[in-house]
Image (cartoon, rainbow, N blue to C red; front, side, top):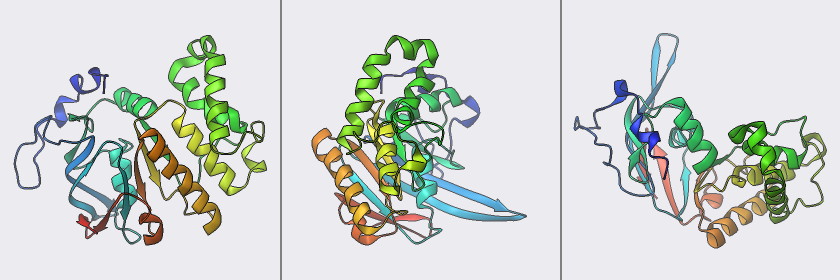
Length: 260
């Protein structure tokens, strides 16, 4: 990660957290490409505190395709959101390239998600008023602003077209989400997640809303991205057959990681 300012401007109020056994966690405590150390996360329902993660340790190697399985409510999506800095842990830390990222300011987290992490979800989250091509381009417009985007528009459009062709949607560039099938919407979401050239793709139940045949097509795309582009993928799923297509599988149970 070249954005040194992300770690240099961390919130001092969140420095020096304690690890799962009370040990101080240093900025370089977690080796590996993407790592979680001693993650704890709870949610409140009324006056009741519900613990979800109870000291999760997870290390993801560069270029690895890792699947995370577990029963509904086990904390799979919570863990993925923490890895992608969409949420912050109550304790523990997230490291990327050996540098802590869970405590960087909001602007730094936005930069991480826009430049280094791509994300796909079960329900696509495509903007209904935009075409497939425009949806894929939207992260670049958000990241660069109108003028910055317009200066490089031709290059960006070429990149988006190439990605949509790669996922089999070259004939659907001008179609809006309501005109696409579920599988086509997920393919567009994958292209959107890749348009900024991320190092890590975080996938939350990417086949959960699809029939088995379409789900297999999406998995083939992910597998190809991992094999041919060395893209690091962390995928959450409840389906063991889907998880088995990854390089390695871990299971979340009782708020902790178990090796499968």
